[in-house]
Length: 188
Length: 144
Image 1 (cartoon, chains in turn red, purple):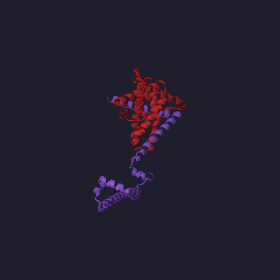
Image 2: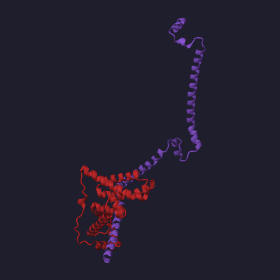
Image 3: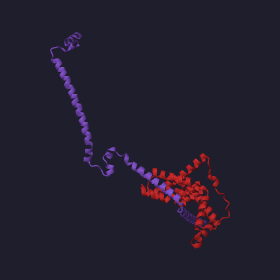
Image 4: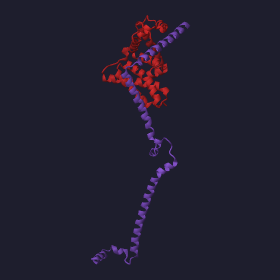
């Protein structure tokens, strides 16, 4: 059972990632803050008595559900329509060699000099923008799997899909990011 | 076939490494959230923790009122038996007193009724005489 400090520590460690993940999805900082706040309250009200180890997965689910609720409400209001399917990218990268790109990126990783570090802020901003530009499901799978560090099964559980779909989404996300960053001459 | 599997493993490993590197850059980026956003997140977190604390504290309030009346929650210690008895004693004395008063009242009523009955029975005049209208009229006339 998580006590106040453990709950606070967990939320502190997760809040910024949760906010960014939600902001990527809803593309509205105020709405993202509201969703994160609602999710925190829901976690505190209903699941604060659960072991600390279970909180990341539970919070991930609550956040995903709250985000989906936000989209449903948005659709009902018809203020804007966010169609996930229209964000799916086409497969126009026939001659793009992912292995080659990843190997090149990996090899250059330790070779960043001071001048490269100067543009670090810009690099971070570009990475942020590229992640934001990923199709919604790919981005969600990528962030849950590699940023929230959930395993494939947990990611599938949060996203409500199969583990195979998670792997496919993650692979496509990495593919798209590697391609986009390579095109800009950047390495993460 | 073996070569293909090795290629797949290499690709998976590189993919995971690349993804984790991107994730670490995202963490770096998210650590630099504007101050107002960080503050709003902090406030939201504190509200959530306060809510959890509030709900946790509300649970002991449903414990028996008997213990609350003795201040055992405030003391945080189990109540001794004699203290428990002492808190019930005034109530028991009150109930006992009320029962005693009721009993004495009933006894007084019975005693008064017995006196009236005894006086009627001991009189020379039979009790039925008081039911005769002529005798009642005679008594009234005598009083005047």
